[in-house]
Length: 200
Image (cartoon, rainbow, N blue to C red; front, side, top):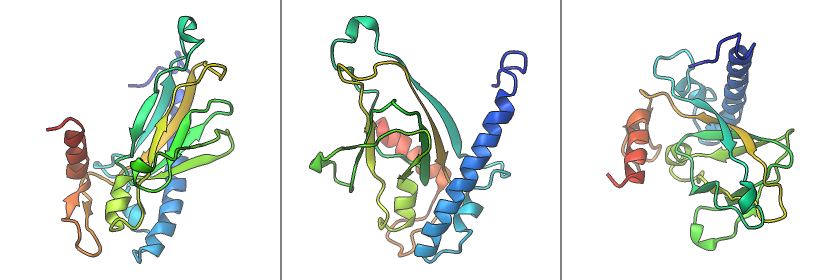
């Protein structure tokens, strides 16, 4: 669903252009990983085809609400708990002064050594997702990350960011180079991960 031109002139064209540029950048980054993994350079580009009816990459405009006035004297609750992304690669665009994103280098959450990511409007944060970890036989681990609420004394206004999730097309079969993982379509993989989140 899109707002009409009368409601928000140019919005649809701007967002679709931005999504296409994000796709182009993600494919450039993934071509480097493809070479390192001894895949064809365009391996991931073929797996993320915007013209395919099975395309399932997504651009999300994220809005975290401001801390209400009655709660501003205390640390705010989590805006997003610790998680890994299910996709192949995430590009995250943040605004200056709207912090909260923290990453956990390495795969083991037990280390609890969280590192804040300084948000700037002129940089892009890249996260490896679980799909790429599986495709690389775990050589490229997906990283845990979270968005903590602002602490007392920090900017407690609304937080805005944009995330582009490069997810392989639904019909693409993800095959482990060494055979360590069973082949699975990207669609079934995502469904498997979603069901695991809900314990079903």
